[in-house]
Length: 215
Image 1 (cartoon, one colour):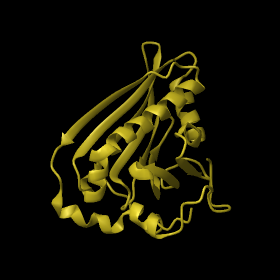
Image 2 (cartoon, one colour):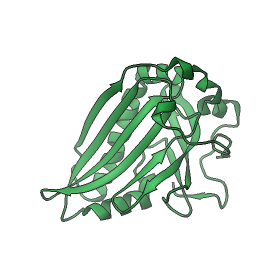
Image 3 (cartoon, one colour):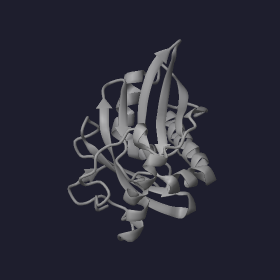
């Protein structure tokens, strides 16, 4: 991981993306006596790389999940395209943390991980608010990308549940909150991390020495 697609880049909100805006919620219910909400978030932040599906790598900052820190990612996209990029920690406390994408990521948006106790259960949730970053990414999402993303987070929540002896039954809710495509943002593809990754050396399988931990 060279950081070539991360250095010097600002974070982006869904407003700055190209495609339709989606809100995707993935959640799993755990027994609160075995999985208090604060324990779930502590485990999630400390072991997030362990819960990601095979073929994808998350390199957490050595200082941990804290606001302003940058995590590096190696992801497998539809068509076996490899994406090397990063995400900035926008917010983190004992109940939730939020990661936000940089320009060039497949989507513009953020992902919030949270846990809350209700009626003897702890609900662990990953909620994504996003638009495809550019026309190419919008097409990828339409032709298999959305299904792959759903599987990704379902597998992540299943792995988290297993850490607390949960059954891993993941509830998924997907809502298109804005069907408009922002054609004024069509040029975002010039900063595509997927294209940048392809033009540079193949994504390595480990972080730079002394740079990032986890995975």
